[in-house]
Amino acid sequence: MSVQSSLIRELMLDKFELSHNAAEESKNICCAKGEVAVDFHIVTRWFKKFRWGCKNLDDQARSGMRKTVDSEVVLQAIEANPACGTRSVSGKLGLSQMYAIVQQKYLALVSRKRILLQQDNTRPDTAQTTRNKLQELEGINLMPHPAYSPNLAPPDHYLFQSTVHFLRSGYFMNQEEVEASENGFFASKNKN
Image (cartoon, rainbow, N blue to C red):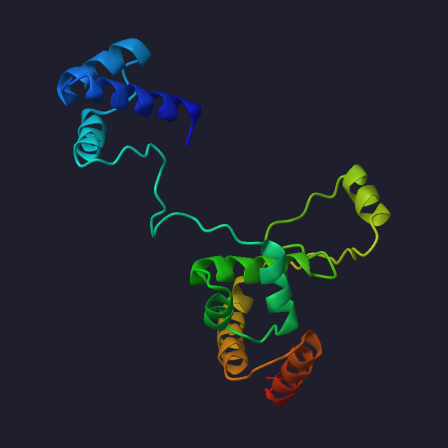
């Protein structure tokens, strides 16, 4: 809760105890603190709370509020068993499933051993400074960019589609298993 909202809530409580009504108090607060300081409906809601006897000015915990979770605990749970699903991680730690999904994707991005550069069909920048900088960086191999050919696009589509279906049917624990499986898949394909 911000300092501004706590001051406004204290002011509303004081005015309620002086028997002011919500409508005039909403106007007074907006005149004193600015036009968008507080909405009439919020003042009305707080006055109802005060009428019911609730004098607590703090925000109450709600189901939609964010839980504080130690990210290290989540990362350790995922690293301990990388094949576990997000539901099992969120169930063990009492998290929302979305938080576990985000942490798992973050772990996959952070733990990469090499730099991955996306390649598209446009010709890369071949400025001398760019080439020199790429040669200075360790771990980056510069590969020639293939020319775009419209007669290669349809076979690529069918090859990639069948590759995706093949990979979805398997369960791989590490990169080596994926590479070995792909090599076997491509070896089984007709070269023509």
